[in-house]
Image (cartoon, rainbow, N blue to C red):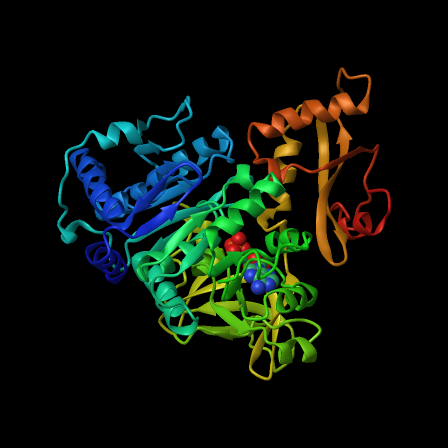
Length: 501
Ligand code: AMP
């Protein structure tokens, strides 16, 4: 596989070059390559079921990268799982993926109920040095990684990304963006979000260095800014939400990051005001808006946001597709729409996933074959004007909150399962066209609590066991009834429009 070959080449040419810097540790290309060989030998000796996924649990430690490469060198895809994901949800992933092997990089003591062999990286490290034949590597249409995203039925769904999918993405990044060899990349997104792939593999393939900003750093602005200064970042990858947070501090400018030359954004609407501020504070840096879902490998369209674009457009385009990919817009009858007409964005090309792991029904709903190529229905609305794609919101109840993707129905499903709840509806609360927080309206069941806040904390406690903190609504309110549509469904529109949320 070209990507692994490129990493191997970088390790041969610059074994002493740093590949990953995290607050407590750093690692060179030589160490990454050699240790991942060692760990791959350990995995091969386990004789796991062919191509079965390996779950890698941790935050932003160098051992995460060693585990990823160790897995794929041994012919197994990995499932990156951040420590912010509660264990009950992790068990669901193990169950769905039929994972037999779990690498615990986190250093946390875990009680896993599913039957899966768990090892820590210290145990893996005891394996003697080895050299793995590239014959064993994950290749072509085999899965390279599986990333779990929120699913509307209450269970997360695993997006399978093959070696070919990832190669198509990395080739595009290195061809169409100003990413030359040896640059310093910011690694802001934890590895369980596919935004992290936007810095991880372009950096590894081009001999770059990743600088990790952990959740502990992000939580403290003073430490975050010290870390940013130290990072000497040249390529910035983040959600617009994260850069917006940084912009609140006036010292976020080219004095702090004098070498910053490229901003790459993905995952959410990129506001004009954010780009205007970035142009003022980082006049030498180029800004790119990219668009795409996890199901099509991180991103598939791009548009450079220049001063000219900022003057001309009130809504920024997400741009043009990478050269191997086609974007088509279909109406409700599955017919192509005409220029400037709104339709569902369909992505066709070699970076589109084969589907959701072990979920044939969900896969058939969202993926199909289009003229011999894999195609994905994004559920995003868009239109094309003068050759540029524009994003126009969602066609369903998937949302982005502070950069995190989630299905409102999944949250409702879990709240609805609480014994204190009869029914629940979750609505996003907007401020300046951006979702600020989630509010849940509940018809309570019988419960022993005197005060509403006690009921809220009991429900929140239950939710904390199954949902990551970012999916738990901020505001809870209790009602005798909720407005209904004539066909008997909860009327979300009416609820969102009313002030009582
Ligand atoms: P994820 O799978 O987490 O990358 O989320 C994919 C979804 O994020 C897409 O289907 C869009 O709804 C949204 N999204 C991604 N990029 C952009 C963008 N540049 N502008 C607006 N929305 C975006």
